[in-house]
Image 1 (cartoon, helix red, strand yellow):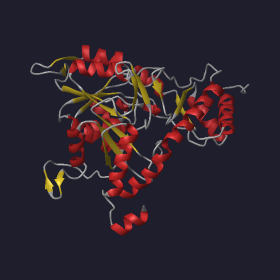
Image 2 (spheres, rainbow, N blue to C red):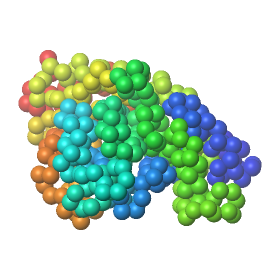
Image 3 (tube, rainbow, N blue to C red):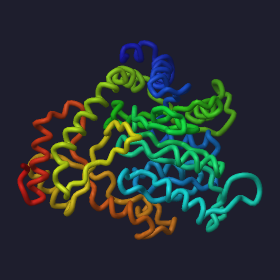
Image 4 (cartoon, one colour):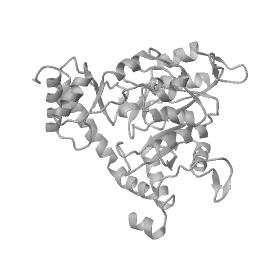
Length: 374
């Protein structure tokens, strides 16, 4: 692929990008995949193409990587939040319903709702499929239908994750249940490039066409710019790398599931370690394995002393970050997200992680909590 790119000077776009787009669309079960420069690009372009307008409000969750909210703001919209489900860490449909009922009112002209505090049209919902597990989509989609809202999935951590839709009577892959979805191929993802990359998937021809224009300076054809766009194209060499790795993704996801089952067995006997909750409607791909523990700082430090790396995804809910102080949402606004963010720890999780390594992680974790593993 490197030789092909060098020989043809096809560094941006071209056959390698088009080939990966076809392959990723087939993998996700969508009609179109549009390769872009990053997951942030993917979400921003998807929102704009789906119909989010400057000044609109877009609802998401505070327990996510900041790029989710940045993409909303960069699309010209005002981000707003609903709290998460304490078991799944993703959008709580009951809290979304309360937001649409209590904080919104019917738009005075036309369909939809407006936020009764800001007067802004609420145009879209962005459920985040966090840590490799999909959000509870059926009730979210039903609420969106009732209130005439767009739904754009943030699937940046959910390559291959599935959700059993009772409404559809079948398992549905991440990216197939909404107007469009955004994926990231940041190197640490289940499907990672050797640099920045992302993709939008959709079954809507108009959304796909507009995303292709948005990523390439608004071009409908070379040097004919129908709209103002961006420079958000997928590098051909990255597309080639992703095509090769995509062939192994299903296998790697199964390895992650096996690792998650092993962690569940190793850690499930201690009530101080709260393992990930997997509802019966979920087939996660375990991008991360996130537990909740007391005295997180001590746990992390003792694991580090034992040579075991950990992470926190994410330590500060987005509404409390300095970047979004202007929204005026202080501590206590979303108590579940705030409580969870103080307790979560991401343990080592990757294809090829051995059971011996997992036993070592479990033993060090138990020791940090004050006793030895059985």
